[in-house]
Amino acid sequence: MYITTRLKNPHFPPETTAKIAMVNFSISEAGLVDQLLGIIVARERPELEEERSQVIGQINENKKNLGDIENKILSVLYTSKGNILEDENAIKTLSSSKVLANEIVEKQHTCEAARNRIDDNRNEYLGLTEFAVTLFFTGNYLSMINHMYQFSLAWFINLFCTSIDVADKSEELDERIASIKENFIRSLFVNTSASLFEDDKILYSFLLACKLGTKCEGVMATDYWQRLLKLNQDPGEGNVNGHCSLPVSLALLFSR
Image 1 (tube, rainbow, N blue to C red):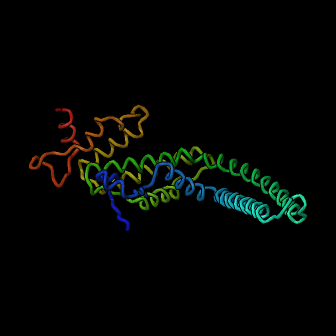
Image 2 (image 1 turned 90 degrees about the vertical axis):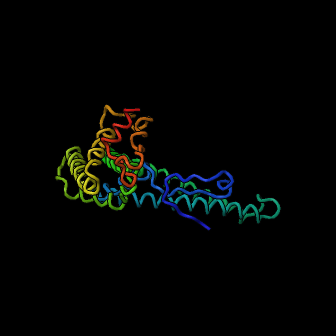
Image 3 (image 1 turned 180 degrees about the vertical axis):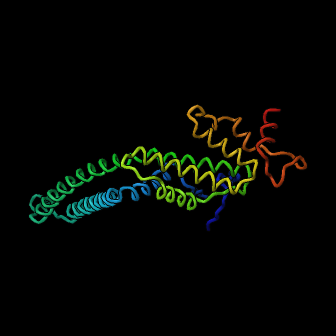
């Protein structure tokens, strides 16, 4: 039996926790960075991404072949009767397996070197994907203000791909990446703001400024920041369905 929940961090009594296995399927920052990196490289340098797929496939095949050889050697040693040095078939099998294993190991080293070279080229777009991931997880803070503020990953990736397509072309990589960043943050801000209450558009701008600002590092890790986001008013004081606007949140926060 399995049970699913949309809660990001569900809590259960100790006796219940001891009887269940919790699996978190929510995407991580590292996982999303890798996913977006694959998307941008496939669109900007498709030959590089195709080569990477082939190299990874070859690496996995080499690992499988090495495992098969090891199993074959173990099988020969297990089935051999008496002194293995007098078993001509076993000696031939072990010798051929050793030669084949050495060839596979050499191929594996070549593939690993090729993968490192490809990864170095892919990492030229790493700053762009980290920037996009920062924007995605910044938007997730909005759900702490109002539960209606939920944005799907598929929608986010679609905006990212569209921004890549409409950004200005350039032979200079830095100019190209800067254009994609500009188009993406503009598109994301406009589309996200369209689904927010008017007061919360200011809050979203504030979130982006704090997350992207070079002088605001560590702000979101403070207790004051969490209190600002989670703060709710008492019923009858302007709070509608759990919604708490930025001006009221700031007033309540700094009055304590």
